[in-house]
Length: 186
Image (cartoon, rainbow, N blue to C red; front, side):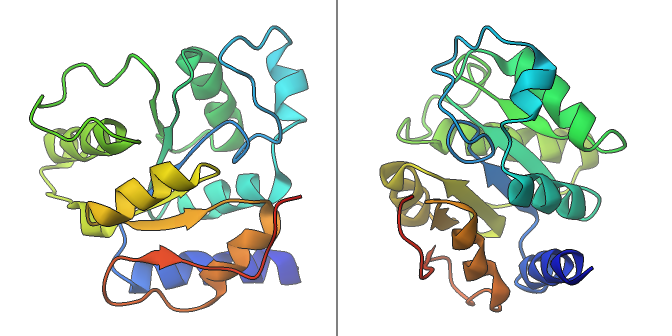
């Protein structure tokens, strides 16, 4: 029960901070392993390798925030199917290695920027709601991807394990920045 309350409070902090998009990397962030985009096991086996804290965050956030998976993996169908299992009533966008080709070529093609812009474009097309990068939080195990997102106007959190989500226990700062936590790589 306390865990669920803590996760709900984290989501509430994101919403109160003006965030509308929670962008999550897949390998070594949602999933505890790096699939290298060539995972050969079953969906059920892979589901067992997901970080429980990330699953809870997705489940708590997806009805209230747009959740998007931003990955360099080519296995977007597999990831989409897993997201449907985790949060069957909500649309979780998945942006993989080849799913961002329609994004404006003027966008900085660094880190996860094309992924993030693709998510924002779809949100605008789908709902007419114009979201901006300063309404996005990227959680990724690759510090370079996170720092690029922050330098382009998004919030970011480098993921070194589930304890890093403690950075979401505090209110979100007024200006996009790199959120920090007291955790270390496992």
